Amino acid sequence: MKRLEEKIRAIHDWPEPGVTFRDLTPLMRDPACMRLAVHQLLQPFLGMSLTAVVGMEARGFIFGSLAAAELGVGFVPLRKPGKLPFDTHTADYNLEYGTASLEVHVDALQQGDRVLLVDDLIATGGTAAASATLVEKLGAELVGCSFLVELDALGGRTALAGRRVHSVVHF
Image (cartoon, rainbow, N blue to C red):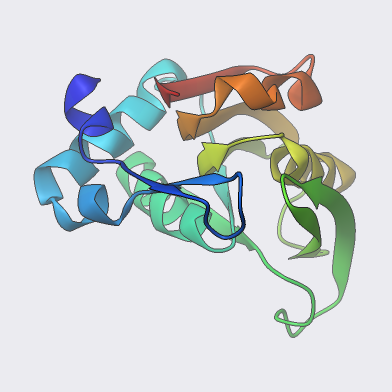
């Protein structure tokens, strides 16, 4: 996955000192790399009878909706608080450099749904774990979690213990 890795720009000390932000905009600007990224995100989960893809605000919307379209299934957005107009469930979590919450409509998924969680990056795993909690709270089966980038040193995979995790590029 060297081709994808080369398109991911490192921005040091952003959004605060000591943090290296992995900027995916050069990758997203390249249509061939975007197709390759989506293909690699989905590869381990093809043929698993998925019914939906869940993506977290904001970059998870990009990769998740492309993955859902490729699979021919629906896309469910997990949003920041106050952005969804209907009744919601909420999950709070810690980030590498702060805290946040995600919400999902109470009727977005149901018993029997087989869901793939997709996001651009996993760092400490807080966002992913909160997302998994929301999927499971709605009664759906979380088949797996797929990330374009994994920051290995931050140990985010441990927050998803017991769940199938796939990452395309590792830093």
